[in-house]
Image 1 (cartoon, rainbow, N blue to C red):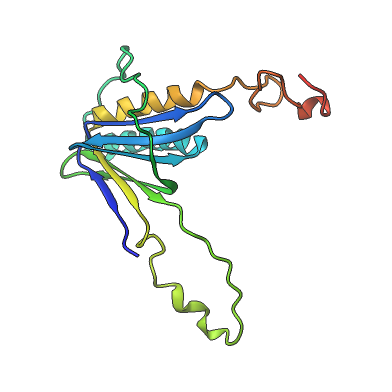
Image 2 (cartoon, rainbow, N blue to C red):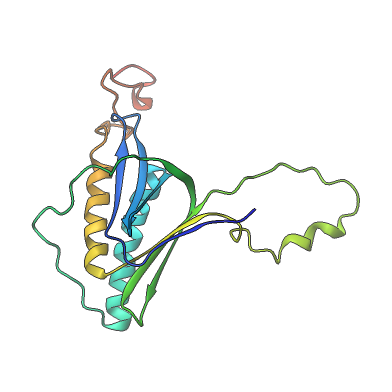
Length: 192
């Protein structure tokens, strides 16, 4: 089966966003450019870690390569909803980050989650090492985006706003509070 690489170098728009009410949100990365629109689903924690690691990548690029980083803008950037239709191309399993020194751009690659098949092998144990040379992600769809440091900063700020726009955390245990409350482990299961 062939895989697709959705490359946007650079995109017209690349954002993190959600669909659904707090507590039931589905998180997406969405890239638009050249008359194409690609949306990939991922978990909230992946969006949060992506923003954190992108910030670290920019800081390291500045330290090691002398890249000029834009200042944090006091003006709120792209705050528009996701473009419609939001059709999930695939669910993200792996995120990859790189900094291209030649073009001074950040490369983000979202790779589809692989189909994990439970196999029971019977017979010789010598066959176990045969698959070690195969690249597991070669046959998986991917979204590749190339951003300037300024566009990366804008993505980071929006991603943080999207993650923080969910349900407020319980002050005792940190788990999200539902509108009807939640069973707090710090109160031995009593509703809060």
